[in-house]
Image 1 (cartoon, helix red, strand yellow):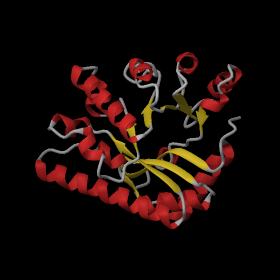
Image 2: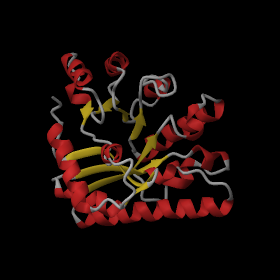
Image 3: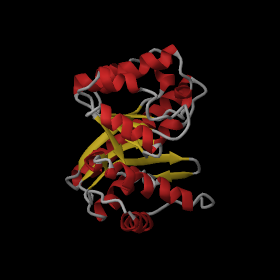
Image 4: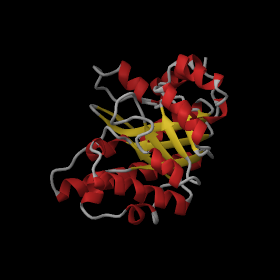
Amino acid sequence: MKKQNATVDLHVHFGQYYKLYYQPSTIIKCLHNNGIKEIWASSTTSCINWKNQDEKNQLLQDIEMEIKEAVFTANKYSINFIPLYWVIPQRHLEGESVEGIVKNSLYKGFKIHPRCGEWTENTPFIRELFEEVCVCAKKYDMPILIHTGLDIVDAPDRFEEYFLKYSDVKFVLAHCKDTDKIIDLFSKYNNVYGDTSFCPNESYNKICEYGFSDRMQSGTDFPIPHWIKETMNESFPDEEELTLCYKKLKNKS
Protein backbone atom coordinates (compact mmCIF):
# COMPACT_ATOMS: atom_id res chain seq x y z
CA MET A 1 0.00 0.00 0.00
CA LYS A 2 1.15 3.55 -0.73
CA LYS A 3 1.57 5.81 2.28
CA GLN A 4 0.66 9.18 0.76
CA ASN A 5 0.62 12.60 2.36
CA ALA A 6 -3.08 12.94 3.11
CA THR A 7 -3.14 16.72 2.61
CA VAL A 8 -1.19 17.07 -0.67
CA ASP A 9 -2.08 16.23 -4.27
CA LEU A 10 0.43 17.44 -6.85
CA HIS A 11 -1.18 15.81 -9.88
CA VAL A 12 -4.62 17.27 -10.55
CA HIS A 13 -6.46 18.48 -13.65
CA PHE A 14 -9.55 20.42 -14.66
CA GLY A 15 -11.09 21.55 -17.93
CA GLN A 16 -12.23 19.71 -21.03
CA TYR A 17 -11.28 16.02 -21.18
CA TYR A 18 -12.78 14.32 -24.21
CA LYS A 19 -16.58 14.66 -23.81
CA LEU A 20 -16.56 15.55 -20.12
CA TYR A 21 -15.87 18.98 -18.67
CA TYR A 22 -14.48 19.33 -15.16
CA GLN A 23 -15.21 22.76 -13.71
CA PRO A 24 -12.08 24.17 -12.02
CA SER A 25 -13.95 25.42 -8.95
CA THR A 26 -15.70 22.06 -8.54
CA ILE A 27 -12.43 20.13 -8.68
CA ILE A 28 -10.78 22.42 -6.12
CA LYS A 29 -13.81 22.23 -3.81
CA CYS A 30 -14.02 18.45 -3.95
CA LEU A 31 -10.35 18.17 -2.94
CA HIS A 32 -10.96 20.70 -0.18
CA ASN A 33 -13.87 18.55 0.99
CA ASN A 34 -11.37 15.71 1.34
CA GLY A 35 -8.89 17.68 3.43
CA ILE A 36 -6.38 18.58 0.72
CA LYS A 37 -4.28 21.64 1.61
CA GLU A 38 -1.85 21.76 -1.33
CA ILE A 39 -2.73 21.21 -4.99
CA TRP A 40 -0.69 21.25 -8.20
CA ALA A 41 -3.04 21.43 -11.19
CA SER A 42 -3.09 21.99 -14.93
CA SER A 43 -5.81 22.36 -17.55
CA THR A 44 -6.55 19.46 -19.90
CA THR A 45 -8.25 22.00 -22.16
CA SER A 46 -4.65 22.59 -23.25
CA CYS A 47 -4.81 19.34 -25.26
CA ILE A 48 -7.32 20.78 -27.74
CA ASN A 49 -5.89 21.72 -31.13
CA TRP A 50 -6.84 24.92 -32.95
CA LYS A 51 -7.31 25.37 -36.70
CA ASN A 52 -7.09 29.13 -36.99
CA GLN A 53 -6.24 32.25 -35.01
CA ASP A 54 -9.79 32.78 -33.77
CA GLU A 55 -9.94 29.26 -32.33
CA LYS A 56 -6.52 29.74 -30.75
CA ASN A 57 -7.53 33.02 -29.13
CA GLN A 58 -10.71 31.47 -27.73
CA LEU A 59 -8.90 28.40 -26.43
CA LEU A 60 -6.19 30.39 -24.67
CA GLN A 61 -8.81 32.69 -23.19
CA ASP A 62 -10.71 29.65 -21.89
CA ILE A 63 -7.56 28.24 -20.29
CA GLU A 64 -6.72 31.59 -18.69
CA MET A 65 -10.21 31.82 -17.21
CA GLU A 66 -9.93 28.27 -15.87
CA ILE A 67 -6.67 29.08 -14.12
CA LYS A 68 -8.14 32.27 -12.62
CA GLU A 69 -11.21 30.37 -11.40
CA ALA A 70 -9.04 27.69 -9.82
CA VAL A 71 -6.79 30.24 -8.12
CA PHE A 72 -9.78 32.18 -6.79
CA THR A 73 -11.37 29.02 -5.37
CA ALA A 74 -8.11 27.79 -3.85
CA ASN A 75 -7.58 31.16 -2.16
CA LYS A 76 -11.11 31.02 -0.79
CA TYR A 77 -10.28 27.77 1.01
CA SER A 78 -6.70 28.77 1.99
CA ILE A 79 -5.21 26.06 -0.24
CA ASN A 80 -1.58 26.29 -1.32
CA PHE A 81 -2.27 26.17 -5.04
CA ILE A 82 0.40 25.65 -7.72
CA PRO A 83 -1.10 26.23 -11.18
CA LEU A 84 0.99 24.51 -13.85
CA TYR A 85 1.45 25.80 -17.38
CA TRP A 86 0.71 22.82 -19.61
CA VAL A 87 3.37 23.53 -22.21
CA ILE A 88 1.75 23.62 -25.67
CA PRO A 89 4.47 23.30 -28.34
CA GLN A 90 2.25 24.82 -31.05
CA ARG A 91 2.22 28.14 -29.19
CA HIS A 92 5.99 28.23 -29.28
CA LEU A 93 6.20 27.08 -32.90
CA GLU A 94 4.12 30.17 -33.64
CA GLY A 95 6.64 32.43 -31.94
CA GLU A 96 5.66 32.76 -28.28
CA SER A 97 8.40 32.41 -25.69
CA VAL A 98 8.01 30.34 -22.52
CA GLU A 99 9.09 33.26 -20.36
CA GLY A 100 6.67 35.58 -22.13
CA ILE A 101 3.82 33.29 -21.12
CA VAL A 102 4.73 32.63 -17.49
CA LYS A 103 6.48 35.74 -16.17
CA ASN A 104 3.34 37.88 -15.89
CA SER A 105 0.90 35.05 -15.28
CA LEU A 106 -0.53 33.07 -12.37
CA TYR A 107 1.54 30.02 -13.25
CA LYS A 108 3.90 28.62 -10.62
CA GLY A 109 5.15 25.50 -12.43
CA PHE A 110 5.13 23.48 -15.64
CA LYS A 111 3.42 20.36 -16.95
CA ILE A 112 5.03 18.36 -19.77
CA HIS A 113 3.07 15.56 -21.44
CA PRO A 114 5.26 13.81 -24.04
CA ARG A 115 2.23 12.13 -25.62
CA CYS A 116 0.52 15.40 -26.51
CA GLY A 117 1.18 17.34 -29.69
CA GLU A 118 4.71 17.87 -31.00
CA TRP A 119 6.21 16.44 -27.78
CA THR A 120 5.94 13.01 -29.42
CA GLU A 121 8.79 13.92 -31.76
CA ASN A 122 12.38 14.19 -30.51
CA THR A 123 13.22 17.12 -32.81
CA PRO A 124 15.75 19.91 -32.20
CA PHE A 125 12.79 22.26 -31.63
CA ILE A 126 11.43 20.05 -28.84
CA ARG A 127 14.84 19.82 -27.19
CA GLU A 128 15.20 23.59 -27.36
CA LEU A 129 11.68 24.06 -25.98
CA PHE A 130 12.36 21.75 -23.04
CA GLU A 131 15.55 23.64 -22.27
CA GLU A 132 13.66 26.94 -22.42
CA VAL A 133 11.23 25.52 -19.86
CA CYS A 134 14.17 24.50 -17.64
CA VAL A 135 15.71 27.98 -17.89
CA CYS A 136 12.44 29.57 -16.76
CA ALA A 137 11.94 26.96 -14.04
CA LYS A 138 15.36 27.82 -12.64
CA LYS A 139 14.87 31.59 -12.96
CA TYR A 140 11.43 31.66 -11.32
CA ASP A 141 11.86 28.69 -8.98
CA MET A 142 9.16 26.58 -10.64
CA PRO A 143 8.83 22.77 -10.51
CA ILE A 144 8.38 20.67 -13.66
CA LEU A 145 5.91 17.78 -13.64
CA ILE A 146 6.54 15.29 -16.47
CA HIS A 147 4.23 12.48 -17.56
CA THR A 148 6.19 9.22 -17.85
CA GLY A 149 5.34 5.72 -19.01
CA LEU A 150 6.82 2.56 -20.46
CA ASP A 151 7.43 3.61 -24.09
CA ILE A 152 10.30 5.49 -25.72
CA VAL A 153 8.26 8.66 -26.14
CA ASP A 154 7.51 8.94 -22.42
CA ALA A 155 10.46 7.10 -20.92
CA PRO A 156 11.50 8.57 -17.55
CA ASP A 157 15.05 9.15 -18.79
CA ARG A 158 14.09 10.86 -22.06
CA PHE A 159 15.17 14.26 -20.69
CA GLU A 160 17.85 12.99 -18.33
CA GLU A 161 20.55 15.33 -19.57
CA TYR A 162 18.55 18.27 -18.21
CA PHE A 163 18.19 16.70 -14.77
CA LEU A 164 21.97 17.01 -14.48
CA LYS A 165 22.31 20.37 -16.19
CA TYR A 166 19.56 21.98 -14.09
CA SER A 167 20.34 20.41 -10.75
CA ASP A 168 18.55 23.13 -8.80
CA VAL A 169 15.24 22.57 -10.62
CA LYS A 170 12.73 20.14 -9.11
CA PHE A 171 11.60 17.52 -11.65
CA VAL A 172 8.66 15.27 -10.74
CA LEU A 173 8.20 12.15 -12.87
CA ALA A 174 4.55 11.15 -12.89
CA HIS A 175 3.31 7.57 -12.48
CA CYS A 176 6.71 5.86 -12.00
CA LYS A 177 5.71 2.71 -13.88
CA ASP A 178 9.18 2.04 -15.32
CA THR A 179 10.51 1.16 -11.90
CA ASP A 180 14.12 0.32 -12.74
CA LYS A 181 14.66 3.56 -14.66
CA ILE A 182 13.00 5.56 -11.90
CA ILE A 183 15.28 4.02 -9.26
CA ASP A 184 18.33 4.68 -11.45
CA LEU A 185 17.36 8.35 -11.86
CA PHE A 186 16.68 8.75 -8.14
CA SER A 187 20.13 7.28 -7.48
CA LYS A 188 21.82 9.80 -9.78
CA TYR A 189 19.90 13.03 -9.15
CA ASN A 190 18.73 14.51 -5.86
CA ASN A 191 16.43 16.92 -7.71
CA VAL A 192 14.32 14.18 -9.32
CA TYR A 193 11.12 12.99 -7.63
CA GLY A 194 8.16 10.84 -8.55
CA ASP A 195 4.43 10.91 -7.92
CA THR A 196 2.10 8.10 -6.89
CA SER A 197 -0.66 8.67 -9.47
CA PHE A 198 -1.42 5.38 -11.26
CA CYS A 199 1.82 3.98 -9.82
CA PRO A 200 1.41 0.21 -9.35
CA ASN A 201 1.79 -0.93 -5.74
CA GLU A 202 4.61 -3.28 -6.70
CA SER A 203 6.51 -0.40 -8.32
CA TYR A 204 5.97 1.85 -5.32
CA ASN A 205 7.06 -0.87 -2.89
CA LYS A 206 10.22 -1.58 -4.88
CA ILE A 207 11.12 2.12 -4.98
CA CYS A 208 10.67 2.28 -1.21
CA GLU A 209 12.77 -0.86 -0.71
CA TYR A 210 15.64 0.95 -2.44
CA GLY A 211 15.34 3.74 0.11
CA PHE A 212 13.52 6.36 -1.97
CA SER A 213 10.17 6.62 -0.19
CA ASP A 214 10.94 10.28 0.51
CA ARG A 215 11.14 10.98 -3.24
CA MET A 216 7.60 9.76 -3.89
CA GLN A 217 5.13 12.64 -3.82
CA SER A 218 1.37 12.23 -3.35
CA GLY A 219 -0.62 12.49 -6.58
CA THR A 220 -3.85 11.09 -8.02
CA ASP A 221 -4.20 12.41 -11.61
CA PHE A 222 -7.73 13.33 -10.55
CA PRO A 223 -10.28 13.53 -12.16
CA ILE A 224 -8.90 11.08 -14.74
CA PRO A 225 -9.82 8.10 -12.49
CA HIS A 226 -13.39 9.44 -12.53
CA TRP A 227 -13.33 9.83 -16.32
CA ILE A 228 -12.12 6.23 -16.77
CA LYS A 229 -15.26 5.00 -14.99
CA GLU A 230 -17.58 7.48 -16.72
CA THR A 231 -16.44 7.40 -20.36
CA MET A 232 -19.96 6.59 -21.58
CA ASN A 233 -21.55 9.25 -19.39
CA GLU A 234 -21.79 12.70 -20.96
CA SER A 235 -23.56 14.34 -18.03
CA PHE A 236 -21.95 17.21 -16.12
CA PRO A 237 -20.10 15.74 -13.09
CA ASP A 238 -21.21 17.55 -9.91
CA GLU A 239 -19.38 18.36 -6.68
CA GLU A 240 -21.00 15.59 -4.61
CA GLU A 241 -20.20 12.91 -7.18
CA LEU A 242 -16.58 14.04 -7.55
CA THR A 243 -16.06 14.44 -3.80
CA LEU A 244 -17.18 10.84 -3.24
CA CYS A 245 -15.02 9.60 -6.13
CA TYR A 246 -11.96 11.34 -4.70
CA LYS A 247 -12.68 10.01 -1.20
CA LYS A 248 -12.78 6.44 -2.56
CA LEU A 249 -9.57 7.08 -4.46
CA LYS A 250 -7.78 8.31 -1.32
CA ASN A 251 -9.04 5.38 0.74
CA LYS A 252 -7.89 2.92 -1.93
CA SER A 253 -4.40 4.45 -1.93
